[in-house]
Image (cartoon, rainbow, N blue to C red; front, top):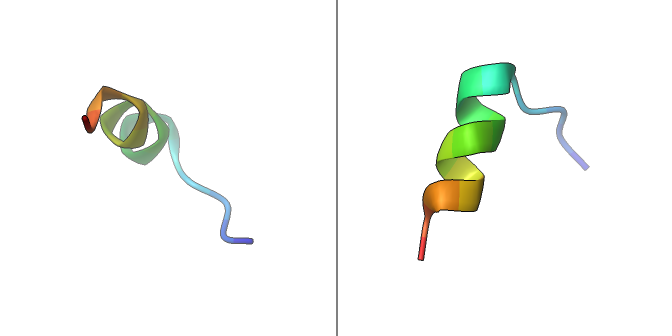
Length: 16
């Protein structure tokens, strides 16, 4: 599992 940065994490959640 890769650790996502704050921005990456938010972007991943926004992804549909």
